Every structure is written in C-alpha cells, then in structure tokens.
Image 1: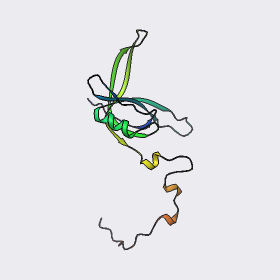
Image 2 (image 1 turned 30 degrees about the vertical axis):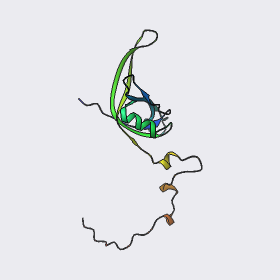
Image 3 (image 1 turned 180 degrees about the vertical axis):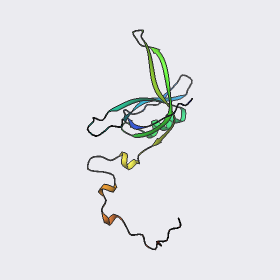
Image 4 (image 1 turned 90 degrees about the horizontal axis):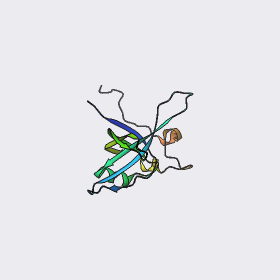
Length: 139
C-alpha cells in the first residue's frame, strides 16, 4: 500500500513550537493549497492540516511564518476523537516527512512596488550574447 502526499502551499498562520509531556517538539499548522481550475471557473482553495515532529517541527517554526510558501512531503493520518458534545469525529492531517523552501527569501519578501526579478519584466539589455560556440553540437 502507498500513502504519500506532496503539497505546496502558503502557511495560514505562524507555526508555534510546542513540546509534548515527554519533551518531543511538535507543531501543527495549516497551509492553503490552490486547486487546479479551468478558464472561466472560480479558483478554489483547500486548507490542509499539517503536523510536524522533532527536528522538522523545529525547522519549520524557525524558518517559516504566515504567508510563507512551503513544500511538504508526508503521509495522511487520521485521528478519531469525541467533540465537546460527545459526537464522534475524525480528523485528517498530513504528517511531515520532509519540508522545504519553495521560494527564495527575496520572492517571499516581495511587497507591492518591490516585485522580484522575473522574465516578464526583463528587457534585451539584461541578456548577453554567448560567443565562441560552434554550430556543430556533440549530439
């Protein structure tokens, strides 16, 4: 059987590092993930609950904040519990196996009027001719 999830999204709040009674670091947070959509359709966003343990929790709380783009690789886990009214509930969350940066610091810090460099805002003077290349390619 196979249980693998790969997501890219933005944190909906600053992750907070907590510690279990046994001293294990943990953080729970959610990320906003856009769904694919067709032209003319309204874009929809899913909010996915994430949990990270130990060094991964420490890494995420140290380097990511609300609005940061994050890449998550993990697995889906379910938990059953009773709510305050005694109703049985099931929670779905992604347990992090790997987390990584998806955007550069510069991209993440971009604000209105301070856009990161992109091909769409470059002009011909930003590029140089590469000389000395033979037209005879080795493949």
